[in-house]
Length: 200
Length: 105
Image: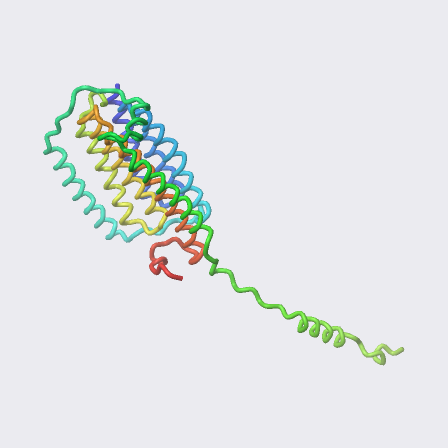
């Protein structure tokens, strides 16, 4: 049963990944990326890592994808199609990727993995203790560094997205009030019809 | 570990995902599409960490904690990249790679 579910998840993930990198419409490719991320969360659930699957769903599927969708909607015209690389270049990079993939697979299948037979369930409390412990296998230092990194990324994102001027707008023309008034007066005097033409 | 599924199959899946991401990274011409490919690459590496932790060293927590850190770094990176892309769009009116070759404006 688990095997069947794994294969279904794998097929969905690979198909969605291929669609995400080859779709001509950007919003659709973001949604295909969402499918890949949710499939990864399903893999974590199958491996009994519930906490990691929850993080994957909230941070990736809930945060990152929504952020990318926002930027697509701010930037892109939805009906516009993306320009893609030339066919020769596409074939070239596909060939290179297949070459790299074959090297990876040859290495993976040649290496004798010593799989441990037992399967233990990791609770969230253990992860919390590992993250906050000072002991030999504790992760308190990278945990604090990550918190500083997140803070600096937040401030940096606000500063970068807010600052800067828009170049596309034309500069506003300066209005000289006295000149405007003079022009208006000139127009009024020119439009005045001479009285003798009316014939009074 | 998943019953009936060997570690080789899951590593094959993550390798395929990784190289699909690399392919998109090379062929796409749009900054947001490149960001999407980057997410694919990062995600496949996270699955690798988790799988190796679960199959080879199930009593340790290193791979798990590292994948949490990778997720945090990826989220920060995405936020910064989106901010930079929006700023580039405001300055040049385009998010194509060919038109953002100069960094100063």
